[in-house]
Image (cartoon, one colour):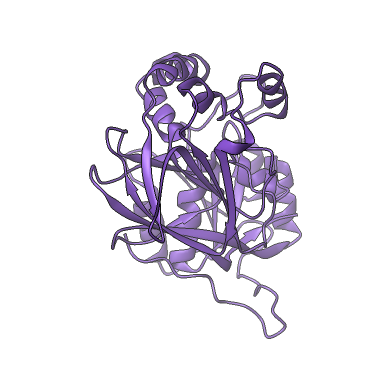
Length: 328
């Protein structure tokens, strides 16, 4: 994967430079992911996208990857200046990586299950995103980069996680035919009985943990698992460690995301005590990870990425003004 580079096209006043797209969608490449979260209640957004971006080029993920679609479009005489993606957080994260690589402005058209980044950017519906595009409401936002050993940096929009959460996702991926709810329930049950501890080392200090979460911007201090960022422009990483002093049950229940679920877990005294949790806020961090018997994966923006089966080095850093995006 080519190395990321932050978007640098800004005016002398510091505001993002205007792109060459128009309100009818000329200069916009739209990539749709039909495999993203679906709803039988929400109408298909594509007719509205086609109506409002009538001159946009629209491609669907299928036999060609997002990387190939963007590379082909950028080699054309009428290369796009805006990359729009209709999909969930995983698709949006990959599109952000490609937007940075090709110096494009990102237009997020939320079409997934959770749409964490779209909500943080104030475009939690396709209509809101198209309104931001019509208004030319572009801003530069902080992203993060994750690097394993000497590999290429990967763009992160929301959070990176090691340990119990990636293992749970990996278990759920084995049961995609059951849907996210049932697949997730079975995966959680298996993790309660089989989650693995991992060892991390930072600056010579060793810790055995159930999980590591690193979110962009300062998040809710009462939570361990963070997927939706609280800020678009705070160039810090909010890192949470769950030390492996308690049970696997607490390791899994600590992954609760919703406020109501958290309240129930606390009422049942299933959440880990404060003494098992550690938090640090930094602009960058480097860890040596010793996965042991844990599944060799990490999660970023809800997607899984393979890691070495043995020890490896993970470096994370916040990148100010790393991406131009339409936001409200």
